[in-house]
Length: 172
Image (tube, rainbow, N blue to C red; front, side, top):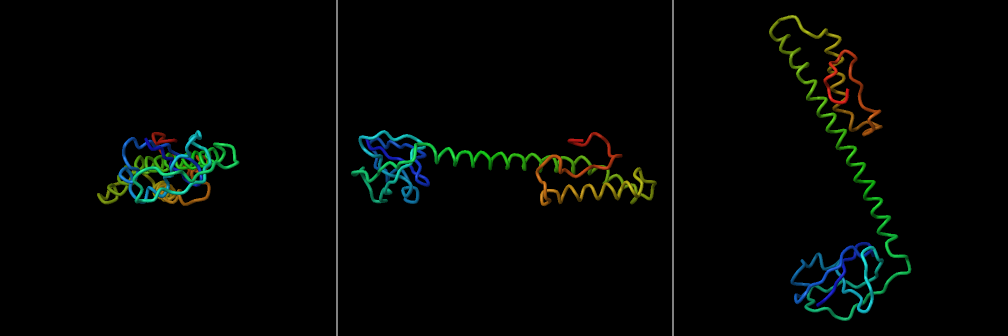
């Protein structure tokens, strides 16, 4: 049974056992560039730093490995990469939540703008004053522009709804 490791940026990220199959039969040639024979007689763990030669695309069996562990303690580089990834995911989550809040706020206030326009088209008196309608339009425009503004996605930086706006809007 042949054993391989997948290495990204010098760190073992996956252990692979191919059974009776050749590694080249299991993975695409582009993927083989990151797969290396596991060092024989050594324990290899996820997160361990490893310098190794990639498996040639024509490989049919594991040959003598060309791998040597580095002096850096196992896991240090992986931990740093993981922390950076977690921070990125958290930031993306906050942006997604605030974009959803913005969409919900636009949707929740759409009826007011539509009702005002309908009332004007019918030549009737409007439920909103001209000043309130202007404030509503400015608020809705601020919501649209908010993702491009400084302070996004902080909740404290959200556009402020007019005081008279019904309290049934999301996050109000």
